[in-house]
Amino acid sequence: MRSYSEANSSSIGSVVPVSSVLQQVTRTPSREISLTEVSKSYPLKRGATLTALQDISLTIGNGEFLALLGPSGCGKSTILRIVAGLEQPSSGTVTVGDSTPQALSREHRLGVAFQEHSLLPWLTIRQNIALPYRVAGRSVDTAHVQELIDLVGLAGFEDARPKQLSGGMRQRASIARALVLDPEVLLLDEPFGALDAVTRRRMNRELGRIWSELRITTLLVTHDVDEAVLLADRVVVMTGRPGSIRHIEDVDLPLREHSELTRSPEFHDIVDRLTGLLDAPKDA
Amino acid sequence: MTQSLSVAAARTTGGLFGRVGGAVGRFLLVVLQRYWPIILLLIAWPVWLWANGYSRAVAPSPLDVATDLVLHPDVYVWPVLWTTLFAVGGLALGMLVGVVLGVLVWMSPLASGLLMPSALILRVVPVTAMIPILARLFGYGSGTVVVIVVILVFFPAFSLTVSGMSSVAKSSRDLFGVLGAGLLTRVLRLHLPAAIPSIMLALRLSAPIAILGVLLAEYLISGVGLGDLLRSSADRLQFEREWASALVATALSVLCFGLAQSLERRVVDRVT
Image (cartoon, rainbow over all chains, first blue to last red; front, side, top):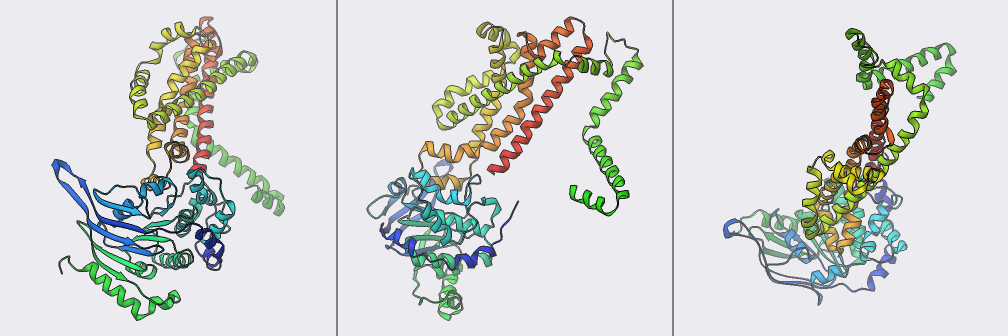
């Protein structure tokens, strides 16, 4: 059994031009996501209910990168699952453009990556990335699949199986799969949550590079403050039980080289403030 | 291994014999470790005969059994082929029936309600008790042999298919949900491939059972195969032949299990 290391691919990944992929995307415009007074509660025993989300109103602009930041169990993943059409809100409405999440999902216009890479072990990396075509019943655009493989830095590993790759490389494949159908909305649920800190930083940097070329409407769910501030245009800080919006931070940092940005005082200002908001009790 | 042998040969021809001797020793040790019960049996068998003073009519010695096998291979070849053919055919058919029923039950609650009780009844009733009825329905021949094997074999395949299909991780199910996959796509591209390790487990468990089913059916109803050889040689008081048939049947069963096991390993490595 061959096993590939993370370091092999990162150098390849960072030099691939993405202009060809960009052309594909401009065909289909991104959409605005709008949540209006969304609540979600789950029935418990003896008529009691657990309120997971309360009165969430939020708009994610066309081509905006929005991060949902909060402690575990604050319902941030539930918001993502509602936008993905995997769950229905108990009250309130969710629209994507002029459509519902369910309709969008039926038309194969959503891209999603979870914390678990959920690559199918019986398929190669190339076949995994091409899977959305098969599910949608379309013929596979092999050239586009190859572009995405190059884009996420997996060139040379197309015919490997997921178990032969490192955790970071599996996550790259999972993100390539999310992008392959040129989705109008990209949903990322803790995509790097299972990675070590160093790999996570590197993946953040690469996701930032890929996203700045594609500019798809994106919802990222994370509990990592640095990751949220680094990647998002806006960061929504949530509090838990029931989940509600506590603060919305516009991240208006000048575009700079990643390593410089993370060392800048402005970056640390925001990170410190948001970390404080996460730590503080709800009514403080 | 071969490389190290040739290297040794190149250095000194004298050392070669030592190396080969060592290899043979290791091989014998492995055989002893794995198959000691068989070796013990082959030793205990004649000792038991001798200690009790049994004659050939009570129990033949290993030598008598081996002699009959070697001198009359033609007696055994056809029965072995028949039994193998029906076991493999019945196993394949039973696996297919089990997997198809499993997929249907997984896909539809209606199919589940209709099929589960009958499947359980077929599982619970001893197959020997069904043989007279089956023989009336399907005749005293090869058809019934296959039906009996299918009845014995389909249930593990059926239940393991259902549980394998249900064992898919939540994130994979979510992925297919977001991708807008229909029921058929989910079955064919996610749940059925995910059930392959369970289906291969069913194959491994059922392979010796298929041999058992064929032997039983041949013994009781049909006039061909190893099961029939077992019975007819007993009827004719050919004890060496009877014991040799039992030995051949055992070897066949072990072989089937071994083949199914290596197939399972290979397939599971490919899909996980």
